[in-house]
Length: 429
Ligand SMILES: C=C(O[C@H]1C=CC=C(C(=O)O)[C@@H]1O)C(=O)O
Image 1 (cartoon, rainbow, N blue to C red):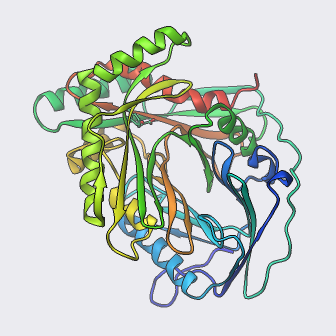
Image 2: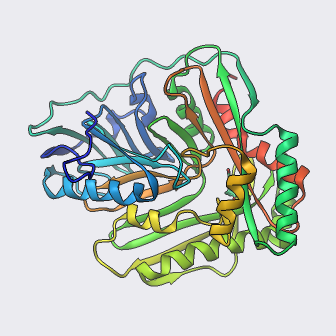
């Protein structure tokens, strides 16, 4: 059910939402929660086997423009003020939850999508639960059996999206020139690639492969945006705020000894450390007003993923003010210099001019929100947007932070490495 605006123009969700969460035996759940999703897909937020999968739609709304976060947050807050909740488990992710995904740019037609699923299955360590939601009545019980396994997409063909690889390389060169001329310090330039699958794409195919191959990332699916992001924009849980900032990358070679040496090079690369520092600074600057204290490690660690190594910093904070939802935090933090640049406004203007595409919901916040406003929001990286009208089409995205010392050829190679998770997820080997 998708609802339009109320008489005062605000988006609303139906009321009262009636939610019930019951404990289930973790042994009754498949090892991969994605196996529960129906063929038409659904919502997911899974890491190392824990997390949430959800299907059905009790309510949904679309938002737009610079208020896309605030309007979704307000609608959810109002719905929760009227909700009837029976929650036997009382953990983060129990009770009613909304999944949402937002465009990178304020002026993108992609706007924001918020979905309240009918059924949510969650797992957190030894705890597992089932939540069912309906409007005005208790929802019937839901199944916990795995669905039919998905079929593969068959052969996949790729072609450049907004820019050819050569044209993108030139855009990087132009960005480097702008930085060297002192017009800005850093800009993140992204490119898109269009994929066409021989068979209609079953989103569960890619979700299953992403969750298996990238267990340390957050594998997500919301409103047709799928991916496995290594970057946590913000998690807010009982007053504790966490963020994983990434920026600065080196490709993996497949040879463990060589990769270890590369990790050492990355940790001391002044170009990558500069790129990383801008991202940490932008995140902490935006987070501090909401926190009574923050902890920002002085030096980054090297995060090892199957395709790349990243410089990473885990920032934590204690929320100072009651009532700031995780979505409001995500809105305040977006866009960090990991996906836009420094200074933010100059970087956003430059990337919009150079990329020649709409990023859609790539690089925007994606995640879930609980009844109390706590939740988890990733940055929608290592992702693809499925075409709502053509089950054979999707757009893959990857971007790279550009600073004065960036080299266009290396950035193109880095963007290829960042496309690898989605490319492999579309494969059948
Ligand atoms: C923009 C992306 O990655 C960001 C996150 C980690 C490392 C990055 C980098 O080294 O450029 C990017 O800032 C992407 O994957 O599309």
